[in-house]
Figure (cartoon, helix red, strand yellow):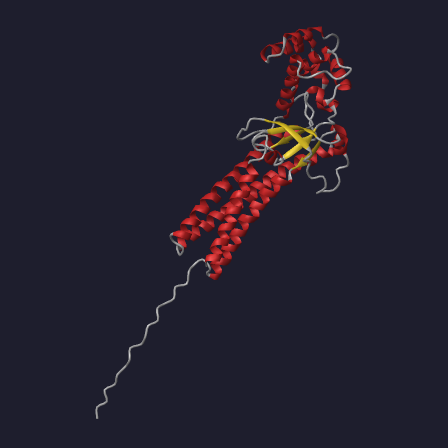
Length: 359
C-alpha cells in the first residue's frame, strides 16, 4: 500500500519538475537556460538578396528619405548620420543592391544565432568555424541542435511572447546604426559612411510587404504564434494542476489514506494533466518542426539554418510520460486494491456451549 503511494507521488513530483524546466528556457542569459529553447536560427550565412524580397517598394526616394530622417529624430540616431541620409542620390533600389552586394549580415547588426523561447529570444555568436555549421542537413535526428554558441543578450521576458521577424530585424539594424554613430562598431573594409545612411533608410522603410521569409511563414506567422501560445498555456496549466495533485496526495497520505473520494478526484486531476500536457507538447513540437523543415528546405536560397533544442523537447515529453505513468499506475492500483489499506476483522471467539445433561 505505502510503496504504491510513494511511487505515484514520485511521478507527480517528476511531472512538476520537468514541466517547470520546460517553461523557463530563454528566460534570461544564463548557460543553463539559453540552451533550453524552442528553436534557434543560424543567420550568419543569410543571403541578403532574399531578405529584401521586393525592391520596388523602395523606389520613392524622397518619401523614404524623409521617413528615415523622422525615424532618426525619434530613435536617438546621431545627427552626423541623419544628415548623411540627404546625400543619397539616384535610384534607391540601386543603393539597396549595393548594400546586398557589399555588406554581410553582421554589418546590418544581425548576430550569428537567435534562439526563441516562450518569453522572448536570445542571441549570440558562434564559437567555432561558421562554415562548418552550414553543411548538409542529413537525416532526421542528425544535427538536431547546435550548442556552440556564446549567448550575449536575451530580450526582456514577456508572457505571451509572439515572434515578430520584422520587428526583430529592424531593432537589430537600428541598434547597429546607433553603434556606428557612437563609435561602438566599425565599418567593414569597403564600406563608407554612406552605407550607414542607406542602412537607416532601409531599416525605417522595411515592412512585411518587402521582407522575404522562407516558404509560407509570412502568411502562417499569426497562426504559428497563436498555436505556440496555446501550447505554452497548456503546459503551464499542466504544471499548476500537477502541484495541486501533489497537495491532494500529501493530504491523503498524511490525513486520510483510505479516503476513496479524495483518491478518485486526484486520479481524474492527473488524467487531465496527462491529457493537456500531451496536447501542449504536441502543439509546440508540431509548430516548430514545421518551421524547422520549412526554413531548412530553403537553405540554399536563404542561407538560414534552424535547430531544435533537445533539452526543451526532452523535458516536455518526459513530463508527459511521467504524468501518463501516474495514470497507468493509478489504474493498476485501483484494480489491485493497492490504495486501500486492508483492515483485518477482529477474530470473534465462539462462546463455549455448556450442556446440562439431566439424568
